[in-house]
Image (tube, rainbow, N blue to C red):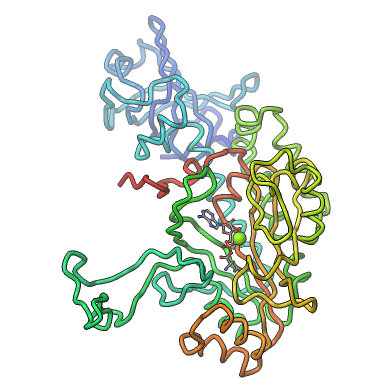
Length: 464
Ligand code: 4AD
Ligand code: MG
């Protein structure tokens, strides 16, 4: 048995040979004594054409009655097709039915809306769109590991169940082994977590950053790549309750090192995907980009320098366009997606870093700038998405960090391990978090996060 991908990439070696291929029927055209099947086995995005002649197959009638989606095995001869789109086709000498598909198969040969396909998450990987999207997702994940591994980063596995709220936003899913209908209560009437498996409240992580910092201060350069959970009730095309995040953390490094790393990484992943998924990317270019210019745009981004503005400058630029926004901008406000997209799409027309945000709208661990008002934060904004990356230089000064935590009412006793990193050989260090789904959206032009996650969990959606 040979995979279709292998056949296509070694066409000449297989010329006139007899091979066996397996796959699912994508289309079947039947004209009297001749039948054409487009077969896909999942090894590559494109289909293999099977030609069947009634005279050559004993079960010809049975095969031509099969529905789209049926699984079959074909034995046949490889015929090179230099004039056609694909390099070869198979002329069948025998066919076996592995599994039939009943006539109510929901994926008939027509274009289905993405909304409809979201209702059949278990079947949608078989469509062109999702085949391409999840292949790009896989290639991008590999590219990320390749980028960091080749640069000497250590892959750090940070916990999924955690006792600390990294972002301090209170958006955590609680994990407990207590009987939720009848939890033990303290004398004050609160849930008594001391009787829980974890003996204190535990949650699903919103970020592996704090643990990545521990690892970075031993290994110098680390990265995480794992699932992350946010219980924010944001019903938008860019927010999921469960998403994957990549979080590098680098020691002896400041904010500009952090930005350089982020820019290099994004460019590396774009180049890798363009190179290794040409058919999938052509599909997105032709069917998902209104100007059919996705590939051209991504290629130009690899060769461009990303923009950079301070938050203060960004607010000045945006204020001049306040009439265009639902929420007008003023210094101190958190930037909304509409503002982020305006900056990157209308003003810079390429990815742009916004740095030095007011401390009030950022997390406790970010390094205070000398103005006393802003922190060494950076967000990378990209066209079509808005925020792709959020990162910062971390506050390494123990006294500044503890006073910031006190200001925010964070119990320093709970973070003594985190403060130890500043007590014992603390160094400048920085890192960022890249939302993997948003990267896949950026790469493919898909505009809803529900369509780049194989099994999305978003507000109101947890299919199975
Ligand atoms: O900006 P965020 O919240 O930053 C952090 O969590 C830092 N601890 C990262 C770090 O410095 N190590 O999240 C980082 C990125 C965002 O820029 C966004 O791309 C993505 O994670 N993200 C989400 N993606 C999908 N759904 C959500 N609900 C997301 N929330 C954040
Ligand atoms: Mg952020």
